[in-house]
Length: 190
Image 1 (tube, rainbow, N blue to C red):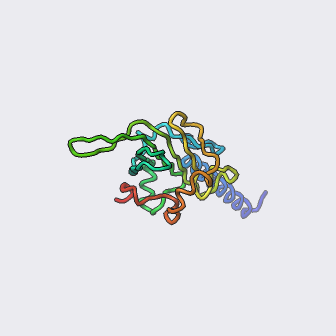
Image 2 (tube, rainbow, N blue to C red):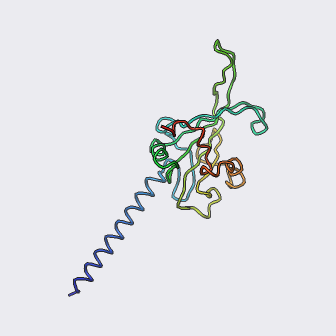
């Protein structure tokens, strides 16, 4: 027969292990849902983002070198829970999926004046908040995020090979706000 204190210690240790495992499993499942990230860290465009996510804001892109002179619009989405988390803490929670949908655009004269509207999808930028550095060997993950760009015709295979070469340069000026230009998203402010 075991002394009572060893049984109590064993039960306590068992409960700690079970609680920790359950919390980790819940976090992993909740944070990296199969709609955006595989267990290996492969990122894809979530199929339901237009109907299930909140529109954070939009950017108008004047024709420049990066767009080969074409005018574009970028519409940015995030899950409602990410918006709620941001409003509480001032930062996107671990696991937040940001979708920036890029559109080609057209400008026309309307009775209200010149107006630019989106036409066809040009591609998708996806970022996934990763505070735990889950995929340290994957060149699409780092600086607290997973990063990928997808062409309009392929939402499952990124053309990004390394986030440091392809993504970080544009986001570096926003380092103080976790590499996100959050000032442009009015929905984050109540």
